[in-house]
Image 1 (cartoon, each protein chain N blue to C red):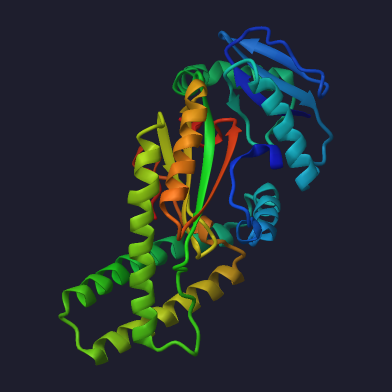
Image 2: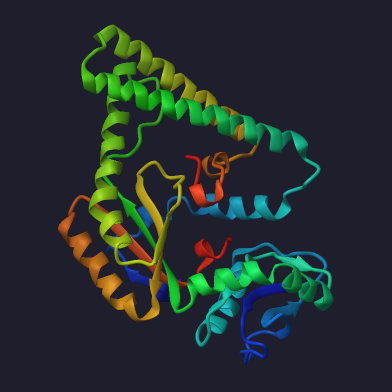
Length: 113
Length: 209
């Protein structure tokens, strides 16, 4: 692998932190069973939910920037998004999906997320 | 069973002695393959072996790399696939001709916040805003100058919240050292960021139609 480095920082450890997840993704992709409808459906539904979550979060961030929200409202929104983030991760784990899986390749339009 | 490695537009490509390779030609294209066991062995070593074969082939020709684990029944099935999709393959080969893929990953000091009991809602949202703008800044400071030196680019999503940019660039073979010099300059100009650049890779991210 080292001969593939064109430019690397002195400390590589932070880049290697997610390595086990790559192996995991590989075996999942290869073992994918076309009969497993449920996982495919979950993937599609969670992709749409994740898209909406990101859109809403960006909207909230813009409104904070604009200063149109009270402290209370910011706190409430923040807690809601944090809770959503947590729930999404639980659901992803339950269905064996990674963040990468919740992205659709829209061909010439690029990726959905 | 056969395992595919690459598609080229040489009818009789010279095959490196790194694996028991053969080639089957159709419609001005050739698919390079090796016999495979019925059961696919999935391991990092097997993946690297696949990669070594594709890279050995890539040394002296342009090609479309075939993803690890792609198997067909026999040589006839490979020839049929070339026949059915020859226009698509020829178009993709034209896009990657004379170029290689370079991968760039950038880590920053503003990781995306993870939900936690110790964060208040407002702190979480503000941390999200900071990581969003850090990611945008990286896009402007690193991705834009690099993509202007590449024939094409693709942003990929990264599972690690501290990774602010993960992208693949399609770089002309003779522009590679200039591209790497540019990466080094950008890394130096942005002391808060850590930049890892690897390659040259087969053009995996640019071979799809």
